[in-house]
Length: 394
Image 1 (cartoon, rainbow, N blue to C red):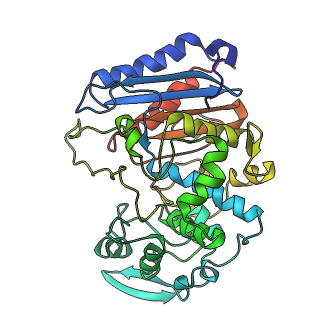
Image 2 (cartoon, rainbow, N blue to C red; image 1 turned 45 degrees about the horizontal axis):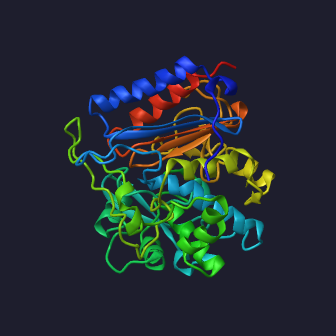
């Protein structure tokens, strides 16, 4: 179910600069900085650029296709956050509800305080809430983003959610047994909070996370190539990274997408195509509806995509300067300060595998870049956004 296409000039995009954007990414492919890429730029409800460059798998010769399937990693988080807010609209919970109300394993949590190499545990001043999970202020963290005592505990206890036999319920039990890194509500820190939200969706809905997303988000939006694994008939469409990093750095292995996982990671487990994700973003840009299907009320979308941190400090792993965080999305709060162009109110996120997107409601625009290159992701995310804004004529 593709979105309608249009000439770039009809959408207020400079045709020459749009072609230049494509040529710059093609040069990156030619220099073997990334195997390939899919680029999609849409404005005013229509697509002005949708192109596939390079190869799908550097071990073969198959060209990248517009329907190539990518590991989305953390671009799973916005989809799961939308599902959470759909259940909020159905009265299943309140944002101020403590997580322990639905997941008792999170009761009586403690915070690890590390001074001079000595770790002491302190009781939480207040319980973490669903709101905290959505805005990453629940005191959780990621094991790969630092060397604190808590992050070392995550690694020692294998909180990567890839252990054999682990499902979403077992994962939250494991996570709840580790002290928090911060007092709930005190710091914004990129974390496994959305994995906990995935488990909460199961509790609230009475069905598995993948099944809930399929029935209530993916199928209604026509996102038929998005899910927690790739079926055999679509194996030939999977994008793969280089076996070796082009700059010589160590490469983290990407997860297997060919077998249905027991644990469906709400924080990073989905795979999908650029067009599927475009339909999701067009729904968001339309403030909750697409092609006669409404997932969220318009005011709820507005609420999700404004800043929810306020004066709460955010670690650099979560945000750039001049940004806040909403409910599942980073949100631009300043016209300057941030080291990439954009409008106040632009919201975005990306995935560790190299995928990224942003939505600019002020310009009625969104853009997606799909690559599979872990170590180059930050550079291409910023380069792509800069090149997209250079195409705008109004």
